[in-house]
Length: 383
Ligand SMILES: [Zn+2]
Image (cartoon, rainbow, N blue to C red):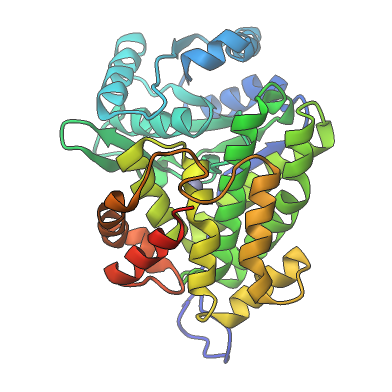
């Protein structure tokens, strides 16, 4: 298929590659053992390594997964010390556990948790495998409705020694299966539910307007946006609302499918900078600058902004910054750098703008902006 051969006006040439198989629904975790055994049969391998974090272990979800794997007769070890922001060192330690438990073989890596556990699992799946061949097979089981990390093979790690983020994984660490069980998200408190849900909504918005968008990414992003906008407030108001939890897990997954194809934009460029400099939770860092970035960007890609406006049922694109700010505030993720209680003042603006302009993700935005533009934008977000 020659992606560039068609010159139909108005249609972006694109290639669509399928992502992981998806098994979605309440109670899907019960089928984890079947999926692991399927991979074993396909790969002539054995064993499983559950990569998760200590917080999740305390909830009983890890024990539930281990019981399912035991019932399937699958020998399993657990790596449960993934930090909130996984580091290169934590991935190296995890890879050693795999090598020790399953010397010379290719166990299935079961990534169980939020974005951090999934990122670390991809790093371990890559590092524990022969570097000249594919990464270890991976099955992803997200327990938050946010990052969409189950849709692709790439993760982000911290390298404290070099004080920077490093990317890990490759296309071979794309999960074989994304297991979406909304029951696993019911126990998540309102604060993290809101912050991760805002992340999913921003993925959808940035994907819809990104320079890398295609008809396929637009289809995923528009449906993700519609669901997240409708259902996050309900999931935050009542964590036991089964419909809202299920809709949000699907929304986050569709947004992940979208961003994996299109890339993100300036909200993430600035959000990464805010998190790197001030240690702020990802979703809160995004909300802090979202309305101002949208206001700054509306003049570029008007058709794409019209689509966002239409999905949200708003009268005109200029209504977007205010409507997005109100929506974030309603779920408790208040926009503005001051409102987020981050202690960020005028003296921090230059450094944030410098870091954001250097982040490649910013250049995928409809309007990337020069450093001076971002200084102005961050200054306007200081309230
Ligand atoms: Zn994000």
